[in-house]
Length: 165
Image (cartoon, rainbow, N blue to C red; front, side, top):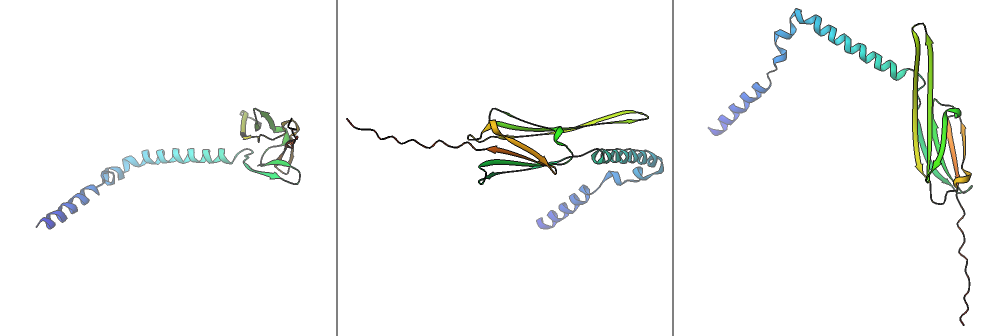
């Protein structure tokens, strides 16, 4: 008997929770169609504008790789930068950090006015303790920024023999 009551209660609660008031005829009558259609149209328009913004302009992205070049005794940072030229890239060192910044600005004239946009990125890396910060070299070729950071030679320990008196 208890099992039967439990099954009956479960069936009733399932059918009550499955009732969705928004599936009533009220929401499917003709007088609401225009409202929902206009509402949906506005959201589609916003989606199209967002997608156009994503596709417009000179988008750029970055990917980086760091390694040690044993042959040349250099630390190397390579960054793939699409959508920029070397004139739009700034590299600086401060407090054992190297910062790479890129900015791209566009300005378009049209009959309705002027449109301006800018995109930027920043990447920072800690420099190794034995990095020669005074001789860092950088090149930009085929959208690849290569930064070579020479490694300072470690002083060899000087061994002195001490004579016991």
